[in-house]
Image 1 (cartoon, rainbow, N blue to C red):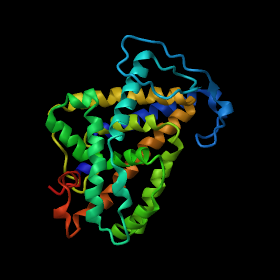
Image 2: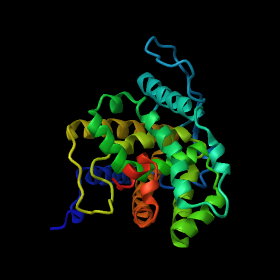
Image 3: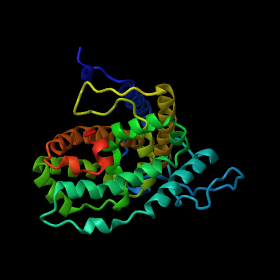
Length: 305
């Protein structure tokens, strides 16, 4: 039996989560008439002010931005808010150090080589973010490297969207049409826009980044028989379960249950879509005549070494 026909433990968990959420949605008859996430008027959402209680456990100086909308199921507890504060502040520290000037250097004659080497800056910044997450930091260094190599292509686009404030870059799109193909550019843009409904909740995507960096053997590698061996696979699954639970609580905090289910479905399905699109890009990168000149980090992420 081919390995790509076998569901990994990670894929089973994702599907079970969506299935569970759907079952919960069916049992909640009060939410049947709610509109979709895109069109849901704020007047239909429950509005309350978040009361922030001081606590000696607080590890950060700057609280997350105020959230005035509550979902129907959950109120964030102190520990949840502390964790979200830490995630948000860690990301902001990384973002403040990124030099974006390189994004204005692309011209009609720019090559894929130039693009890949410049984009290593964004990839490095995301690594710094993950290294500020205690659970990731405590992993065996070899497991950290494998997680980066196997998952970065699936999630780096969320990092781009947050850093660019959910703004499309038409110039890069034109280059991608030339370097890869027009269908790739169209499908990538289409996938990006599914996440635009979350532009008022960037912390949601920061949390999603953490959930998916702990994915085990989820990557649709160009070599479908390539499965990595981790030092401690069990702890990776435990960490991902923990952050998936936090993500689910946060979704239910932001939205009514029906819309939390819809949001989870969108996140999972579009990450899987990125996964397939990046197989196309990886194939093009590997066929590039100057791929041996790529930045070492990009070589590693695209399986060139």
